[in-house]
Each structure stands twice: as structure tokens, then as C-alpha cells.
Length: 345
Image (cartoon, rainbow, N blue to C red; front, side, top):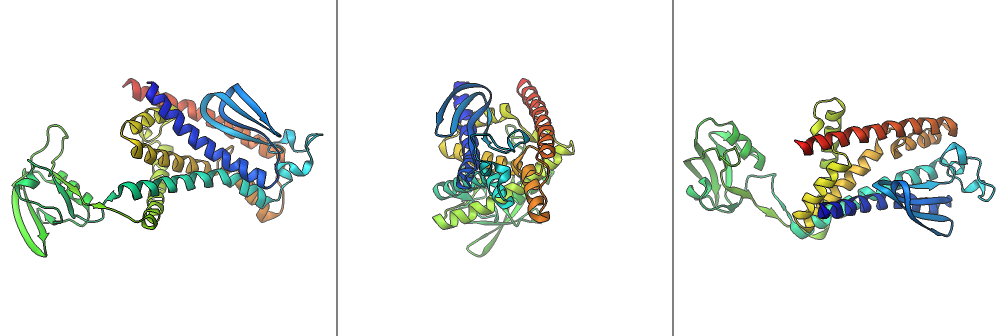
């Protein structure tokens, strides 16, 4: 439990501080008055005033915020001690866009750097081809004398183009006797062997692993960018299924993230860093959604002013974001309930 808690606080701490730190630095750059930089929500635990900003730690470690002058209607007119030109809503639309998008940008940047570091240090499996990397002893693959470098071309006359085709095809066969065609040094080899269903895993295990690919630093960062785009597509697809009510199991709240943080940390440093990158990517994408109270919702208002030249009433925008914040709190309660039910089961 303690190990899981430490892992969770590390993940949330890095994600929140980096996200809010992006807003903070961008606000300072554009000379916006920053009242508070907080990690956590709810009642105050401890705080320290440094210059014009109070740095605080609050009781619930499920988020954080940077409180800017002029970000809501109550402070739009400015404080008697704070110049009006230091309020967020006194800034030009492009400046507000930079400040609002800075947190998301830092999350994306951190995710990309973590993915690239992982690939540079560990490489990855080649799933785009069906080239054998390793053969496990005592398995059907060893019986038919598959070797590293062999290329599987067909299984029961079904063409194999990439690694995932192997397991997909083996799942579809009805008989234990399976015929394989593979290439070795340009020569085609045809062989037949039994691939029984594993009692432990519930599927037919051939006993091979894909080959490992190693990258230079530049290649690693390039591959990391492609990986981030693929993961972003998967995340949005999962979110779409959740919103349509098709799969509630794909979404987790703070409790679910805590459990996954502990599991990732137990698997070693690099797996934990990869998980941290995924959480940063998720956080950035969720905040990019054009929903009130999220950065994406605020960006919509700033972008609308940039395009139309007309500023939306701060009172109206504040009301919209407040309503969105209430809905987000209710949603967090809902997904936390789902997390509890999964843990109980």
C-alpha cells in the first residue's frame, strides 16, 4: 500500500507540477500576476509566500492549479494593489492562448521525452514484420526448429504480414495440427506441428518473440513522436467508446491510476517512466478537449476573440466554466466509484 501511494504521488506530482508549471512560466513571461501555485485540491496543508506568489500544498493530491489575476469575473477589474494590465483578461487573445496552451504543451513535451528515452535505452519489438527474434525452449516453435531471423509467411495457408497476424491466426484455427511456411535465408520451409491450447494462458502459444529493434538518439525521438500520435488516436477512440457507453472498463479515476502506478513501479524504473509518459499524454489530451473548465474550453473563448475581435463577457465565461467544473467533479466521483467496484471484484 505504501509503495503504491508513493508511486501514485510521484506520478501525479510530476504530471500536475509540469502542467501547472507550464501555465505559471507562460503567465510570468507575459507579465500576468500569479496569486497562487498549488499542488493538490481542498483544504490547505502548508504554504509559503515568495514574492507575489503563494506556493501551497493541499490535502487532496488529485490535481492542482495556478490562480491568475483576472481569470474570472471577480478579479477582472483588478485589485487596488495590482495593475489592471497584469490581469489575464487584459492581455491580448494570442497571449491568453499561449498561457492556456502552455500546460498542455509541457505535458506533451514530457511524454515525448519519456517515450524517446525509453526507446533509446531499451529499444522495442518489431511488430511491423513477422521476423522471429527469440525461440523459447520446449515449445512448438522449438520443435519445428524455428530460429532467430526466420520470417513466418503463412499459417494454414493464411498469409502473415505483421507480428500480430500470428496470434490472430492461431486463435482462429480449430485443430491443434498447424502448418507453417517460413523463410530462412531466402529458402522457403514448410512444416507441420501441434500447437495445443495453453491451460495457463487460454490460447495457442507458439513460443516465439519478435526481434528487438535498437535506435540512435535521433531515431528514438522520431519513433517516440510516431508512438505518441498512435497512442493519442487510441486514447481518443477509447474516450469515444466510453462517452457512447460501450466500454466503462477503459476509464479510470485517481484510485485506478494509483493502482496502475504501483503496478508499473513494481515492473522497474523504465516501465514506470513509460507509464508516466502515458499519463502525461492522457492529461494533455484530456485538457485539450473543448469542455468548460478545462484548458481546451478556455482556449475556445480566447480563440473566438482572436478570430472575431469581440471579447466574451467574463461573467458569462466564468459561469460556463463553473458549470463545467461541477460536471467534472461529478464525473470524477463517478469514475472513482467504478474504480472501487473493480477493486472489490
